Amino acid sequence: MSGHPKLLITGGSGFIGSHFVRLCLHKGYQVLNLDALTYAASQDTLQDCAHHPLYHFQKGLIQDPDFICSLLATFKPTAIVNFAAETHVDRSIDSPAPFIESNIRGSFILADESRSYYNKLSNDEKENFRFLHISTDEVFGSCPHDPYTEEAAYNPSSPYAASKAAADLVLKSYYHTYAFPLLITNCTNNYGPFQFPEKLIPLMIIRACAGQSLPLYGTGMQVRDWLYVEDHVEAILHVLQNGKLGNTYNIAGLKGEISNKVVVEEICAILDALQPRTPQASYRDLTTYVIDRPGHDFRYALDMSKIARELGWQPKTSFKEGLTKTVMWYLENRSWWEAIQGRGFQPHRLGLIK
Image (tube, rainbow, N blue to C red):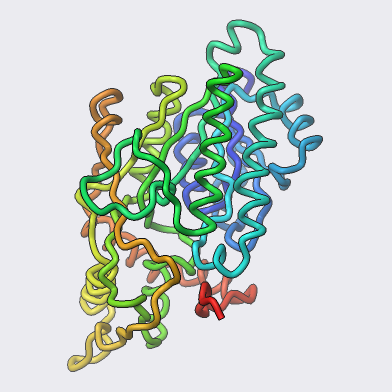
């Protein structure tokens, strides 16, 4: 086992992190998954990996410096990939404090303890060590014209986006000040299997299956770029292996820039084909329009020519193909999301300022 590169993956029991864990195990990495197991994470998501000889799990918080110091000294990772974060915009509007604590303070402590660990490595070990931080397109704010490049100014609108932007800037300062071996990726909206059902696509699938209304914020014309999660994690591993230190890389979908309204219509069309309501009724009939989110960015879009040009990476999954796979997965894995509902999660409207 000692011959395998060691990855410390924080937030590996979450949506994107769990897909990255699977990919890394498949590629022969030894993985330590550090996760706090908050409401949006579950060990059930990686049940198929639980007995893998290269997989280890540790429950804990990235904002606990003594714990992180001890974990690094014991596991001795060759790289760290940080997915750990609070991610739901509406929750950040209702309660910003957990986002500040986890996304800013947690990322700072993880990086600071990692810097101390890095400084004790041999020169050869330092040469190979990487710290990859996973960020979001939301740090740039709404995109009125051409898709944002990696050099775009940060202009976050929500407490969630602001907490991610702050973490990015703190970590970038570590590269410039301490020569800390940092990489950052900013991605567009992810979708796919195992996504927690408060997010748009799984929420609409599950509500449609229950015959409930499909609520669209405002006019439903907000535009997002959609990135299939398996494409995303392959890009992350590509950046970890080949990225230039101190650089940021945008990761986006394969022509996935689509309005929320069209996303819901596509979900309904797939369900109409796979699991019809009645010959006379479509799932689209369940669509309703509700009051918009405060400060809702109209459009997110990233220019990913840098990762294509410098690292030779391109997404492979079209939105139609990825969405069909996703809908089928939720239909075939009801036990996974019903267990989440059984733990008390019920989707209700968040993020309204009273």
